[in-house]
Length: 587
Image (cartoon, rainbow, N blue to C red):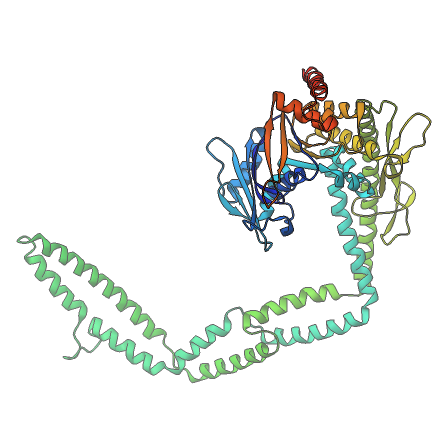
């Protein structure tokens, strides 16, 4: 479970600076038209990674800030906390997580999560797990066939989603092979020409056979050979200085012998002063190091070669490598990489009959696999459609639509569009990455009425109730723990409004629910009632939010009922409505 405990909005639309204290049940937000109720939903959208609109930022102070505190428990807490920590943030000691989003009038946007600056997309990741916002735009989106199919797939469950992922993967492989085969056949001449050029380059590189890092190694070896005498003289002199050489001279002392004399002199007096013992030990270490250097100098002199023939060979080899680097890359490593890419590309360019036949067999095999997965997906959708329709219909009965019924039609996709076709279950159908089905939600408004698509068969009020019924069904199947409804009760009144309030209150038993509404019948069911009030006392119009309780709440409901917050009759009616809602909310 997750609860948005607090939401603070500054400098957004008509809201100057306000804080919304929220509870874990049903939170209702009301207010007069234009007071800024929608800005609360806009602020929520910003807080959870939504698109920023600089036009909504107040000129003073020149930036909008939305801050929120999430109190997380259970599975959601473990998932969100892990993501926050991975990104470098930290939950508070009490387990809550702080989020903030800032948008300037210039359109710049910044996000913070768990005390650290984050990409805005990180807020979106948290939002997907925590909150779902539903408004009238969601109703319009639900009218699109693709959205209806997605809604059914979401309801069908994890096994269905796994099958859908398998189909998408197989479909992608199938289309890749189909496109590859078509391209090889269509552009055979161009492919032959490109392949010939690549083979010429590969033949030239193969003859030279460059090795990674070879140019640097040859350069270093050439430099040693070119200066072999100077190097030999320097190494020989150093060797004689260290060891005295094979023929010591008076001018060159034996460093090893001198260190031995120094060590013995110190050791002779070490009993008198212990400090000399320490120095004697360090001289012994120096003697050991000098001995190692002597051995390495001897090996260097033995390996030093001044062969003119070898130097000429290196010159010729480096010239051959330069020829390659002028044509194919900046250095030898780049030439080697070019050859690898060329070999891979040659395989892609192959238009031989054997390759085409093999690709065609792979195309047919994948087509069969895609068709089989699409058939299984269609069967799964039909099974889910029956369950989905039954559950939504049951919810509609509780939303003052007792005679309405929802049907979910899963139909084969008509071939002949721009998408490919396959034979699925013996029928030629159009197919895409989501399968071979069209899904259509249909409403039978009353017995004897035809089953019509939602966009034709539902009024505004009916569509609001269908949307709410679908969300209630989804809530029972999991999903985000915080649900936001932005005037989804538009076009509804009377008994239907009471039923919507009752359903939202029931939903609030297992979820945190935030509702922006203009209906007193819905607002009466709230566990916490927040009112957005406009202040026009100054030169600039601003709005703030306050919690209303008891008498104040009855006055707000009276205003919503009849526009008369001070009417005794309106207040009495509001109090009666609150009493009915309180009885209904009892478990």
